[in-house]
Amino acid sequence: MTAVGERVLARPVSAAQSALWAEQEYDPGISSSGYFAVAITGPLGPGRLRRAALAVLHRHEPLRSVLRIVDGELRQVVRDAADALSYDEVGAPCAAGAEREAAAAFMAAGENRRRWDLAAEGPVRFHELAHAPDRRTVVFSVHHAGFDGRSKFVVAADFARALTDPDGLGRPLDAAHPADADDEVCAEAAGFWSRALPGVTSPLLVQGGREPGRTGVRSTATTPLAERDVAALRELAARSSVSTFTALLAALARQLAWYGNDAAVLAVAADVSDETTRGTAGVQVNVVPLVLPCAADRAPEVALAEADEALARMRRFRRVPFRRLLAEVPDKAARRLMTQFGLSFPRPPRGLRLDVPGLELSWDFFTANTSATFDKTLQVRADWPRGLVRLDYRPQTMDAAGAEAFAAHFHEAVRSLARSSGAPVARGVPSAPAEEGPAAVPYVVEEALDPLDPPVLRPVSGRALAVLGPDGGPAHVGVPGALFASDPADGSWVDTGEEARVRPDGAVEHLGSRSARWLRHNGFIDTPLVARVLRAHPGVRGARVELRTAGNRGPAAVAVVEPADPARPPGVAELRTHLREHLDGFDLPGRIVVTTTP
Image (tube, rainbow, N blue to C red; front, side):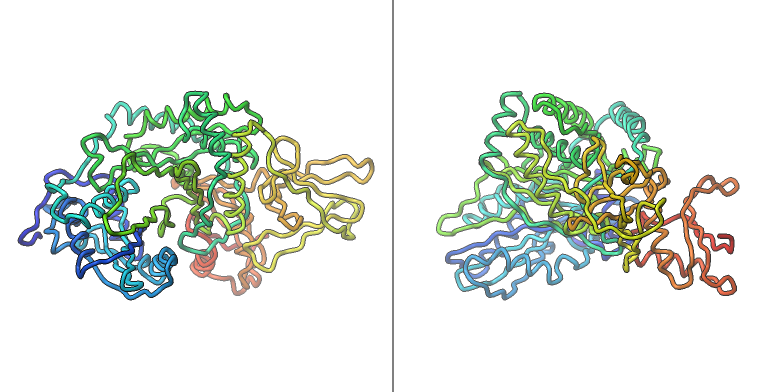
């Protein structure tokens, strides 16, 4: 139902908007949002900031639109700007220069968790934070169903213009819907990914551990790349006639190779606007996956050529709707690979004018996300002569120490490529005190107190342990590798068939059998982790995870549980609740079987 002054757009909403709307309706607690902000110093008359916000809404119809079911279809309903304006004023005293921190604190205090009702409000809220009589910050809290990373620059420029002349923005701009790729290109993309992904047998290898059961999205500190490295990298890119983004992608490939990956599936945020829609706020960014070859010893020119080839295919498929691609790739585990690692390269457009006579404006566009589309997203902002780097991550897939190390290693990878060196960063060599034990067993297992942490291995007397990467050298600290034990007879190294990783303190963590650690079904299930969590339940003695086929239902990931007391076995619902409390959803087996057979 529409009210007086509301207008229903004839064309349907985009696939991305439809998916986000459905997600929000299913779980209103999902924010799917972010923010950016501007700190303003100078004389501001009463209502001046509010009038500028109102002018921006009047200019951009998508920002004053809601999503509703009209005649059985999801439609974008345009509202009057005055009715659509969401604007509040909040006291937030702070010292001069601390405005950015005040804005972040305001968001962390609850705005980033406040639910959105997309059927009743548009995708932007304005918050005026009063710091002092002549200092204000305007926080733009935005929802991704109607606002993308490109839109923040459009809105910023119009907001600055409206502060000078609120009536000078021009006629309203309606919703922009860039054309999707035709069916032939969409089918080509689905075919390529259906062939490329099934051969991947494990998720992307990265630094550090995980914090299963933790929710939300976290971010590392934002750090600048060294200007010397950026200048050298850009010069290298220019000599090879490729973009700076291509060179940054090649540096990332080098870093991922240090971690033991020979190829990576990445998802890149691609701007699909054109010359007719670029000045309109709304949703004109698509997610485009690519396959990136990874090698640490490539000559710079070869690394750049491989990255450029991957980007060329990405450009070919850039208008294939990501949701459609996910729906048409039949392998569920393969589709999961497309959402494990994202890469974003936000760049302010050329000629962006943000100055206002009589006022000092300081914009913060590189703010942390409050929701995560991907498990991890590397954010690299073009801010030449330097670049800013941040990693956004879900703690279910990466811990804080691993995230900070990843960001630091990206700096090192940029430096390595820029200076034409293939040498990886220093890698830890396992070392641990010897323990007494049976001569035939190379290590003693020390179970961790927290089942989410892998057990630690200590070498027995006369033995030594090492975790090796695919190149035969010591694996990077925190990255899974092959576990080797020394032979006490001649000192040679013997492959145990197990997988392990080295902690920063030198301890070796046991991750399980290399051939059976990951169970690929719908997603990648870390079988030793699930078994450890199940064994932590007081009613469970033993547990394992395997693939079973039951009748006509096809194969399923099944957790087989041996109860501690066969007379009083735990219930399946109780065990599933126990798993959900500790693990993220995609880690869970499809079925749980309680048996008295060990």
